[in-house]
Length: 121
Image (cartoon, rainbow, N blue to C red):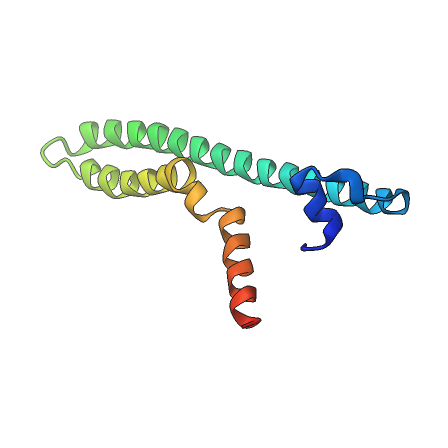
């Protein structure tokens, strides 16, 4: 992506762009918009997955609490289930809402570019 046309797009130096290059410019812009859309869809899907996981956790833990209370009120085994499953819910939440930007596709692209530049000496 280091062609003069793409560099001109990013630096707003559009005087070097000629008419025959307009189709290529439009294609690059469309590819960028498509990639952004795909990234947004992926992020929304991951957020929905966390919400579903949290909802399932609350519903199932409520039912298990009731079963524990009715069947074996002398030993609260439901706390162990809630603890370990809750750790999983917390990790999902952290991955999607806190650490996502640290390890998203842009981070991957930067690492690839860095690797390519180190291979070129």
